[in-house]
Amino acid sequence: MAGAGAPAPTRPGVRFLLAHPAHFLALGAGAGLSPVAPGTVGTLWAWLAFGVLQRWFPTPLAMGLCLGASTLVGWWACTLTARHMGVADPGSIVWDEIVAFWLVLWLAMPMGWAGQSAAFALFRFFDAAKPGPVAWADGLFKGLGWRGGWGILFDDFVAAFCTLLVIALWRFA
Image (cartoon, rainbow, N blue to C red; front, top):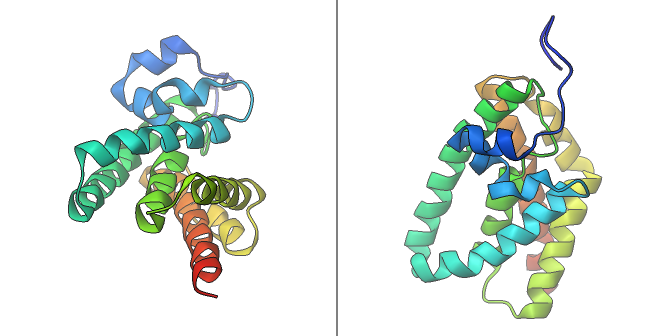
């Protein structure tokens, strides 16, 4: 979706990553530069980073405020980075996976290794396969402006909701 007369978008590299703080955030500190499955790499990065976040934000309220701020700052970063790339929803933007998986972990904890692994697999399934409501959410907000930036995040939040719904049914069935 490059603009008229604009060159075809290319895969971002380290220079693009470091060119603007929004790029660094949206590309998950480099996780989005992975040539293979950047969304999965971004989700793995989120899983590892969540352990650090729990130490910095030890109460549910503090973590919730962190996730809210991460969503707002991420909306800006995803919007700007997509605009700079000239692509409405580039696969190398992984902040959407990161903040959505943090939401899953925050709401589903405490869980052991097996539970977290199941949450990871479920989230990756819903994000990649985009069944039902995730596909609907993916097509709802498109473009290179603020609406499109929100769309980058929104389908991952719906994938997170679907993941949490399956976990809740698993726990309480």
